Length: 437
Image (cartoon, helix red, strand yellow):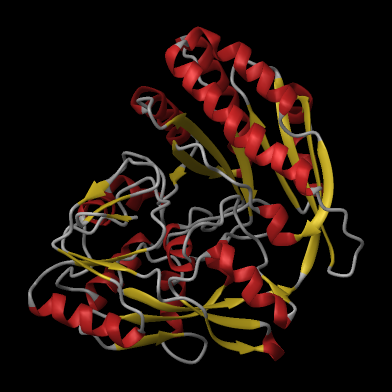
């Protein structure tokens, strides 16, 4: 988010920059003019969305293009359930835009504050072994190239570029339009409950395969897991949403207020963390409801944190998770935030963390005022030993040479980047690290 005085910082407060110039384009033409002007001055240019990446992927030392005014629907293809959106449109705005057309996004993550361009550029995903990340819903896109010209990529034009552009890290140009393949609107029946961790792990493969969407949270220093199982139902299925009071208690009082207090106490008195976590397991979850899909997928996240997430071959999740648990115990660390485990289908996007393999994700978090370096570094070593690929928008330490070994199409992506941005107009320090110069 941009701040008074011309500086920018991300949501997690892990990255900040004072750009040489900040612009707020309202039209695609304004983006083109800004890119052309930046190129003429040899100033790097980056677009930013909501700043929900934990890495420096959106850091713009030169020209920062804040796309918050470039929002809304461009067109709807009702026959094929496809919707073209301006790139700055926030995910939480999309359900209302799709509702009049009887459509919904096929899958979403558990945070919906990101822009659609930012979400696909970083590989944002939800959970569900038969569903891909948000980028897999992309069937078309329009980029502003370094020349200032528009490049359309879809089934008719430049089709071979789509697997790169659909998850492009912001390295190929400025996304100004995104076309999504939607589905008929649907509801989700949600069951959230605490369970014994060992029982969940023993049956994990079966639980994942049987559910449309399954995930689990483990609070360190406990033997309990909070599971979330969502079942897809037709849009006309009976709805039993959470009551406004119940939702407020769960999200605002427990999820935000008490969690913030718990994190503050844990920061001051680390020895209290095991007791806090045991209390959290008793208070959170244990509810059942049915509502519109977007209202179930996304939850409010007001307590700031830092996150690292690794994508593993799905068959390696249990072994890696077991080592993570042993690590926390052996090191005697006090970890207040839960560990999250999710799943996704294999896809063919060149830089997708799920490229070519059914995938499980393990995410670790620390309160934003805590130093995550030691914890994240040790967990990263475990994840790498099990074939892990880091989420592009979450903290990790890898560089281009290591990442090249983990992505079969890495060099193809770099070659396309060389073609579309040979002068590295869209470069920043993070992209230089993960893609090379």
